[in-house]
Amino acid sequence: PLAIEIVSTNWRDDYHLKFADYEEMGIAEYWIIDYAALGGRNFIGNPKQPTISVCNLVDGEYQISKFQNSDRLISQIFPELNLTANQIFTSGLPN
Image (cartoon, rainbow, N blue to C red; front, top):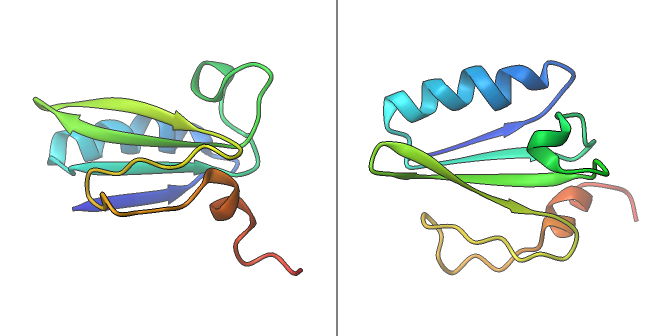
């Protein structure tokens, strides 16, 4: 299974509570899409910038990969996925 969360002002839920819950439930992959760079610097870097954290379950614990700007996402669930972080951040925006 795959879980995707879009970060809002209650970003601590996505980075802490839901992270632990999904890990415990055995969700194979968890994406945290922080398009507004709301999360703490230890999660999205310094300077803060929009980030997609892809968490993959390995031996019962999440291993986290971070993607920003033109980074191509790497997904174990969708190995053929060919999207950049920016493509996700800008999808649905008016041209």
